[in-house]
Length: 83
Image 1: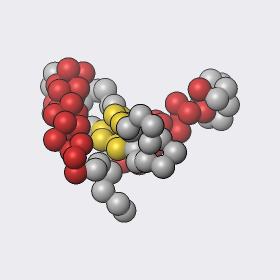
Image 2 (image 1 turned 120 degrees about the vertical axis):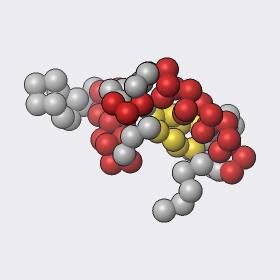
Image 3 (image 1 turned 30 degrees about the horizontal axis):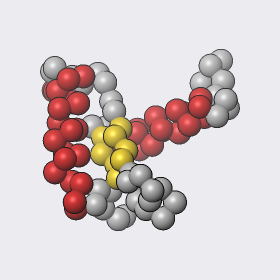
Image 4 (image 1 turned 60 degrees about the vertical axis):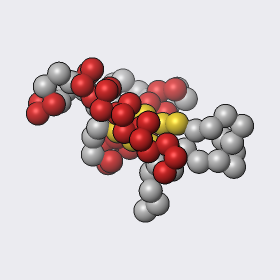
């Protein structure tokens, strides 16, 4: 898999991820809040690159993003817990 962060954005995204993790999870040994941070340069969305960092396992974060997209598109059903 390609690197999830372009080298020029790596330091800032790592710093932000550490700060977010400390903000949401005071006890880093027992995290309760997961997050995903996506960045992209304005004007380069179609031909550019999305950079990704999170504090969770990639598979769990992908499931979280899929649920968010389904909710945003109105495809998520609360009763079944899926789209």
